[in-house]
Image 1 (cartoon, rainbow, N blue to C red):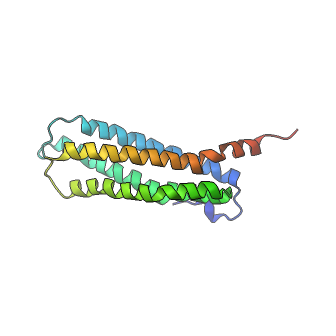
Image 2 (tube, rainbow, N blue to C red):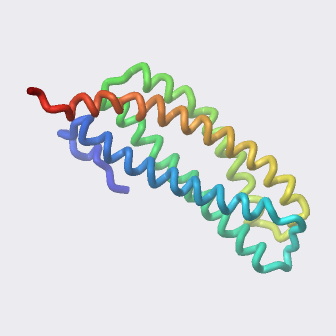
Image 3 (cartoon, rainbow, N blue to C red):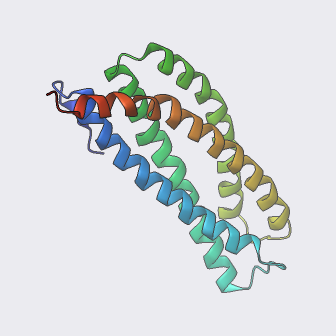
Length: 166
């Protein structure tokens, strides 16, 4: 993972757009994850012998793990780094309070992945998808709050710094 934080001379106004691009990429991965989730949720009867259903489930599980991993190992870390760069103790404290809930939801979400990587029994998939959808919605809401608190809050500061002084 490329990290701007390796450069000790980076300014908050240089770091913010870099993080912004990573967040945009991550949110696009979320959108793709939701499209696949909807496709999977629209299946009425799951059959382990149906290769197309199996491929769709496998694709979804991979997207799910990739999305969760990117959040944990890049996005959240960079949001915290941004808070430090902007010396935003209040945002850091608020953002860090969200992490335990995100981690708990992560465990529930990854349990779904683990279950369906280890079984061909799809009899409870529809029910599990419903529960997963609720967990994902809750996690997405908390993630959005974290982005607002630790990234969106600095947008005005970045804009002000870019205005030319006459």
